[in-house]
Image (cartoon, rainbow, N blue to C red; front, side, top):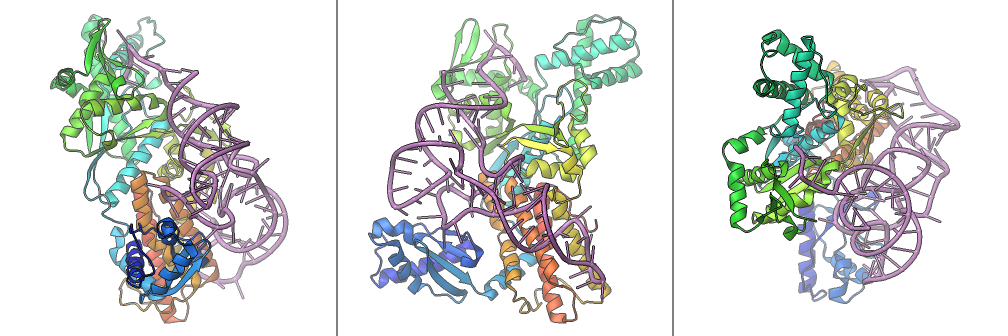
Length: 552
RNA sequence: GCGCCUGUAGCUCAGCUGGAUAGAGCAACGGACUUCUAAUCCGUAGGUCGUAGGUUCGAAUCCUACCAGGCGUACCA
């Protein structure tokens, strides 16, 4: 919509130049925005102000010149205001025609091609398969998934991936924890180390093994048992994670195993490759990456004295692998507690010869779980409601996802379980869903009264004349731009703020205007408008992975 | 010590990568249901945008310093 306005302004500038009123060197970038106050106009531009310097004129004078040459059938009013803004009002026809187009697009309304098919991978969650997901992972999952949906809508060629850290000490602890619980279940006295996994779920897994295998591992030495326990526990937990995420409406295009990078020698090859480039050296019996040469605070160990590879080491191979698969842009979501990891990963990308701009790490801040204002304990001890599943079971998928997505992801999030459950305006998700249900209800009423409605662009929208109606139409038509900006900035919370604003306009409109009335033409036109609102809510919710119920 | 994030109404947060008189919701107060869902709507009140400088036509937004909170600063993941 804004590009159409840009063209109109550009024409005016050209005409002003031909008339000798403006020099236009350099030709200014035409920024079209919405005025702060809707009453000022539908669009505004600040070109006159940005040109002030090069034209050596007062911005107001420039604005007057430009305004004189602004001519277009879609324009209904041109005004110079404030320090030199040019405010434009568009004709009703301009908006009504676009509203029809929006409805025609239906589920595709909001789609754009700003991404131009760029191949992007978003890696998120990637929690270690050593226990169930907690609330923090839930936020990462919701944000990553929504971001993927938004970027797809904005025309990116998108893939999502979960990186499974199935190698290393954590796995050994996991296997050993399970083995110990197994022996305990079979009546042996065990000593359970502090650094092992103490959760109840370990006992459940051990119990499964007892049921399936009996005491066959009891007689074997530890070294012979551990590989089985490690794998069994990991597979079980991973299956649980996948199931929990699916119930949370989060699925991945690919699950990538760290182990596989060792099996196909990718890690070795990556080290050799970096060595060849001179980015690697040995010191104190360990192998180091010269990451300090690329803006990291210090060099990082990739192979320990013990000969074991660090997590960071396989991560190098992993990201090399991602680029090898043709991704042009890599996005990683990480918990904010891992932010120290950012510079060294960027260093890796640069050491591999890539621009670090292709790599974007989004930090997702902590979630504080509250219950009626009181902080809920998040300790790994058997505190209640620490897992994602527990929270989802209590408040529902829609509310949980909404809460995770309503705030900018780089601020701490207070997630109050009581508020999330409440069906009041305290809880915006119900407010928005209610609008959708309300619209559906109006359509049911219309049907009962025998109104012959169908989604046709033959409809006569001329009866829509109320300013309030056009305010809603403008809000609807802004949706594609909101998606675009949300995609560009990779900020998911914009969608929820947008929906809230749009829907509150509808609720106000509803209370002041009757949709189904004896005026047949007006009824049909208003139903068309409501249908457009309904489509926008659905499409917006679709991006957030939230359902739009027809009845509440 | 160094680095990252945050600081906007009593509370929770927006503020569109420099624009016009800084906005919502909640809480408070006062109103609106014989009409399509009152899970709603309308109104009132509420501010030194952490502090101090700087950059310019113009700063909540950019820069610097400081203050406060959170998180990092591993041959853990």
